Amino acid sequence: MKPVKIGFLGFGTVGQGAATVLTRNAAEISRRIGQDIVVKSASVRNLDRKLDPLLGEVELTQDSESIVNDPDIDVIVEVMGGDEPARTLLLAAIANGKHVVTANKALVACHGADIFEAAREHGVSVAFEAAVAGGIPVIKSIREGLAGNKIQWVAGIINGTCNYILTEMLQKGREFEDVLEEAKALGYAEADPTFDIEGIDAAHKLTILASIAFGVPLQFEAVHIEGISSITREDTAYAQELGYRIKHLGMAIDTGNGIELRVHPTLIPERRLIANVDGVMNAVLIQADAVGPTLYYGAGAGAEPTGSSVVADIMDVVRVATASVDNRVPTLAFQHDALIDTQSIKSADFQTSYYLRILAEDKPGVMAEISRVLADEAISIEAIVQKEPVDDSGKLPIVLLTKRIAEGSMNNAITKLESLSAIEGNVTRIRMETLAGS
Ligand code: HSE
Image (cartoon, rainbow, N blue to C red; front, side, top):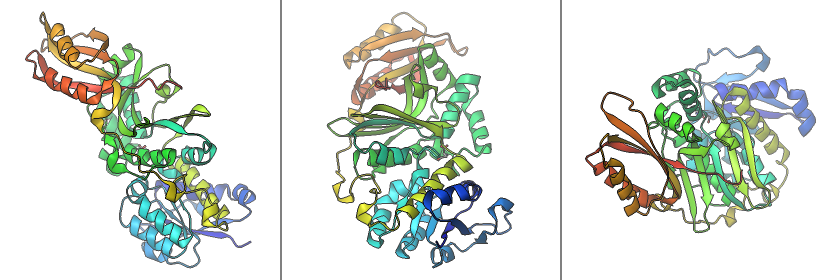
């Protein structure tokens, strides 16, 4: 049978990782799909780039359009990242009748609907396993393995850079900035690392997970997004003393009255498996009605782990290429005309518990003032600890854990707390989730 020819748009870490897996495991892959797969060409910025000899003869070009217009190429793999020219090139490839595999989470989260519609029109597949949690086959698991379930919520550590920074801060007492520099040097971070530390990368991934979990349209703009830049190493240590770990979590919850989509640092009880996912690793915990909780763990970034997902997608699109569009697994897990535009819940109505850190003067009555503000908003205190001073200012950190309350009430309480003369600076607020069921 004629080999399947692949053209890569971009050939950096992920592209070369995928090509390495394809080449090294060529015999195994051919035995699985009954066809050979050949990497024909790749577009790069720098033509002098030296490739690993294992990759054989890959034609390098600076002209991405020549790849999407090459009639000899069956599948386009887009690993260049960003909005443009990736979007235009993918649409051109689809119009030329080529299947498309992409690792581009921003593109799928923000332009997926247009790309999928174009693919339907032209009878080709779009696959994007590598866009979420790198090497973990979580999209396939939700779309196929959990297909019989009603999914109730998804909670994921889906940004390796944030997880690496929080882990180093806790385990080695390192400062945020110092660890971020290292994460950049190690190649974990996005080209623009604010995408990682401000939660945008995780929000792109959560948008995709929520859509395939609940059968709702991709809605990046509905995600409440917070990053980790306000977390201090003291917070990671205080949380640990109270029996929790701070993780940067993406959460999609079907509340029955709408869907909560949120990305933020979160205290998780340390006895949960997901609380012990450290370093650059990712994990996604899914609560579903029939199976209960399932946890998916693995490398969320890196050349061959992400390449592993790209290769599985290539094999999938080749395998189903001869099936009619209606007989393929739907791109967003549900039939495209069965997506339901369930309302997304506004952040003021989120229900969760909180960790608060307040820097207060060391004088009688301060604790009573804080308690009164919380009581006025019907916020119930679960635990309260006064810590040693962290500097010579004479101010003491007070750490509070609260019971579940609407976020709007907590916003009111924080505004009032910050206006008290005995309180210095901003109140640090970190949400807490039990993730019960895991
Ligand atoms: N910058 C991403 C991360 C890479 O840190 O998880 C994988 O998407």
